[in-house]
Length: 422
Image 1 (cartoon, helix red, strand yellow):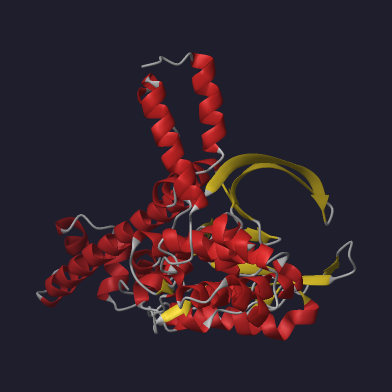
Image 2: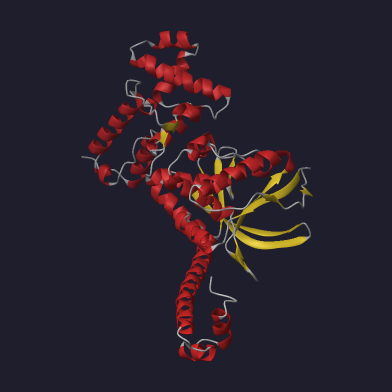
């Protein structure tokens, strides 16, 4: 049997890889017979593709929040028409109709139908097929790794993320967080293209110089972008459009809601900011004043989701320092606080996951301070009870102070009832 040279093998591989079926390994290319036989089988299988196979994405689920039809409807009318005609043609061909009859029925050319049966497929259908293979279509509320990562990215877009022209997704964050998110995306969605881009900022805003560096995760995938958009994620500049929480998320279970809130807070929520009288926690969004009422509804929806976890928040407030953008939009900031009472903050940390690594460290440090404060408070209550007991037994203030190693002034105000531990 003839042995092939490396140049011949390269030519053969380049020829048959265009078929798009498999890549020929070097082991397969040992002899003319094996190579020729396999190559002919691949080419024959490719040319003889028919519409007799099942269309997997037509399988529906009554509980699905997104179906293949939802994805197709994110395309323009021409692409929608092509996609739905493709589906009809597949079904009609499955019933045994001839190409000529299908062409007359759908008012498309036989050439187009032949293309559909061999290699060309409408763009919308290609997106649907890819999402089906990723276990994201039909999209059903569940706790699988695929859906939970989808939901995390969905929440990120509501915060510091963006869908660009239904082709690309940009997620902004610090370098450790974005690297971790990319690793998770690569593991769960290995067929989705992504890259990391570092952005340097050097500008001026309202008289303040802004200098810094940010890291973006760029997801280049039209199918995934359209799925997020069909599910209710905003596209483009969020400041100059009305945004709302989709109904399916409002009706989701607590765990899924917590993932969404965690992604949102990890991007646009604040870390615990300490001041002279403790710390505060808030979430703030910029919005064109044209959408002031709609924005308050959106923020109240977030407050309502937090309330389901018994997390107390303040009323919505506007910064009332509007400014005019270059595009002429008048923009202001709206925000609300999360109550930083110990019990409320502990509930927040327990229920809402923080995915921003640097911000998570700040939360953990504050959580440790709060717990230490609560332990000290409990210890002081025990000491207070002993002080009152010794006082009832006839001990003087100084004797109580020396017995319990307590400052005289503290023993004095506790015994006389001027003050007591909280």
